Length: 232
Image (cartoon, rainbow, N blue to C red; front, side):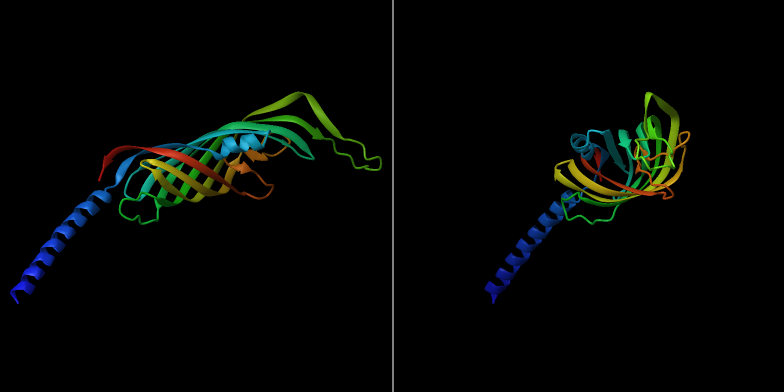
């Protein structure tokens, strides 16, 4: 009987040590890093390689306020040339988007991945350069070319756009403090200042603008690095 009590005490003692080690390990693994995360949207350089009429750069960043809440934003510049049946023009400008991200994912011990629901307010300041347009012709019998290319392109400055944006995405920590992420963006245009005689058909940061439709969509594919400031 004494042998069973000794074995039981040994098992209890080993179990206590194991539990203490697990508690210590968990307490270390569940430390949350607070800091600034900065990165770049790599989808835009890829798009530049595939589309000769596009140039763009976007920087992304966020700062952790609580375990799951972040202040976040994007700063970028885009130039897009569009040649349609009715008009040929180029849009160029900068944009800023500010808002918050909320992480809805519960990480396992030692992990720092995110499934994010985000909200942004976006603002752009851009110019439109009219390169050519089609003349209105009600007589199509001869099927003549009505395209008028401007020898001196007409430039419209001081244009802008305002919108709100919902983001859904995730970020995965590849290595310590290095993250890769992707997000889907759904836009709702609030207001924009049109150039004279035609509409904004492309707004930097918002993407394509459809006539009589204030909604749009976009995405980004980011690589970012977190600069830890402190831990909790």
